[in-house]
Length: 137
Image (cartoon, rainbow, N blue to C red):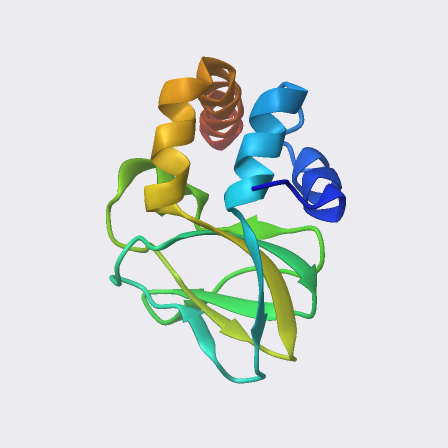
């Protein structure tokens, strides 16, 4: 399946995938799909299954953890990457505040890409390490 150039461009604009080679990025994009979510829909539910990653293309979402509001997200932001990687339950509830369009990547489609393209795993590790260092600072 050929990758949509717009999805490739959108994914490459995130820190998660910015350092990934073209071949791997095309493989990731080929597995992704555009999903529309109506206003008010819970896109992910805290404690729920690890279905995958979402990159917001348009719209705004609210994020809550243990019922406490966190920073709202909008176009260019993403969520679900941790559960996509480790397969553990969702750490937050993400609800569409407006109609939202995301680029979604299912965890079961993503894991084989890690096996075939080790540069993706290296990039994810770099980003996660940067986050950990920032949280410790």
